[in-house]
Image 1 (cartoon, rainbow, N blue to C red):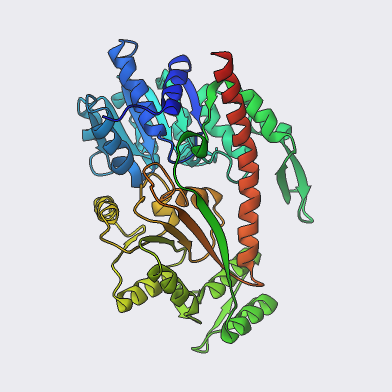
Image 2 (cartoon, helix red, strand yellow; image 1 turned 90 degrees about the horizontal axis):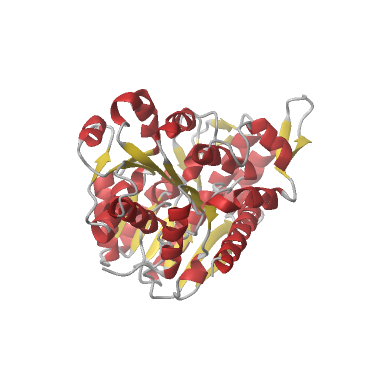
Length: 461
């Protein structure tokens, strides 16, 4: 068995001192293994005999957690609780129960019957609980008191705003560091900006010192390692390929932008009822098709899909992120016509199918994998790939950051690249710029966590 990397051992040692902890290390740094090793050592050293509950994205229950247990801590037993077998999985005499984020609502309803022997709560990708008012966030807050050890993991803790980190931290430390009242925390780290005539039309923006204040408050329970500082692998480069709208696309784009109304080829009219829908429809047009009010796509131009095909054919193994069903269908149709070997991962693909697809991709069976970021952003190792291509941009900074780490991670032996495709003069360029802004704010917080981790390591030497 491969020994722990130095940064993983540092994480294990940190968790031995901090039973309540946030791990904000980058994707691909082996956070899962470090947590499992800490739990395994606690059992060996007779510190704890309690069971562990892992809450994680559905797509990585087996590929990430189950496989890491099999590989690195085979002395531990586990069961995976899906919707069809939840009670059975909890009733099995296993050390670890692994389940998806939404299952926490069921767990809260059955807490008295199933949580008696649990001492460890591990939340993987804790941003799933950033919305304090969601049902699953309330359920997680409700069950937290049953656990002595609470560990939350995410390499993208504040992908939208510093407010994202408040509720996950509450689950971990009961509000000791960031406070028990959300509105009080918001007043400390954000300032209001009026965005409409009504008094309630306010947007809360992070203050300049928000990241520093939060990092200082959480320094004693947070550990952070940068991927590039931990592992030596060939570099990843990022570039934008700009395209031009076809005449038909440009006409449709400008008409929709001007009138919030577009006449489709079949004579029907598409209406954007408010600004959010308008932007969404403009992004669809830029990507090559647009959906009508009944959800049927209308193809406007296929040049972008052909560009992607040419990029794929020039490379050995790629993964392509798509955001729209019309992108998936067009890409699959072209790949089939070109004789390329490919597979698809999205919400329609079962967990078992996804596991097999990843396995075959890693063996080189597919030249390209078409994947929706929501289904493939977390936990999957796709290091056979050398290129990540974004067919169109996403607003979700977490999905963007995480998806880009599927090939650029431990085990990668080749130089890799990330290609972003955007049409000049469209909202696509603005979305990528907005992503950069979100990621810069997130990097500020993460860099502060890293500095504090290094300072703590230095004090302990």
